[in-house]
Image 1 (tube, rainbow, N blue to C red):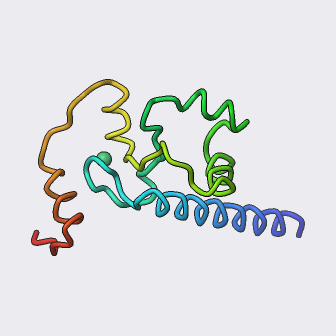
Image 2: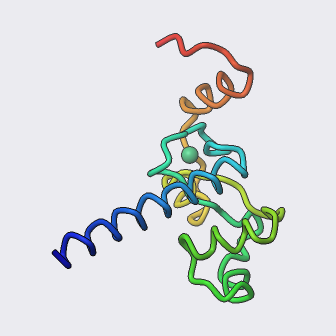
Image 3: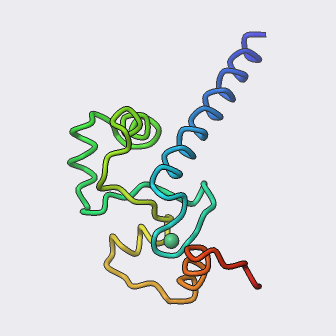
Amino acid sequence: MQDAARKRRREYQRAWQRKLKAEAIAAYGGYCRRCGESRLDLLVLDHINDNGAEHRRETGTKGGWPFYQKMRQQGWPVGLQVLCHNCNAAKQRGLVLRQPRLLHLTKRAYGYEEID
Ligand SMILES: [Zn+2]
C-alpha cells in the first residue's frame, strides 16, 4: 500500500515538473528559436550569452525544474531562449545547422499552414 502511495506521489511530481517546464518554455516563446521544434521533451532553456554555469550558481540550482521554478519566481528574466537539444548542441560546438528546418520556423513565425 505504501508503494502505491509512493507511486502516486511520484506521478504527481512528474506531472507537476512537466507542467512547470511547459510554462517555462511557453514563457520564452514556446519553440526552438533556431529551427522551430516545438515538442516539449526536445526543448531546453538556453542562456543566450553562454553564462549558464555562472547563472545557475547565482540561483543556487543545478538546472532542471528547480531552475525553472527560480526563473518563474523572478518573473522570467531576460537572457534565456528556447532551443531544442540539437540546436543547443550545435550552438555549444559552434556548428551551423543545415537549412531545411528554418523553413519550418519561418512558416510557424508567420502563421502559415504546414503544407507537407
Ligand atoms: Zn532547434
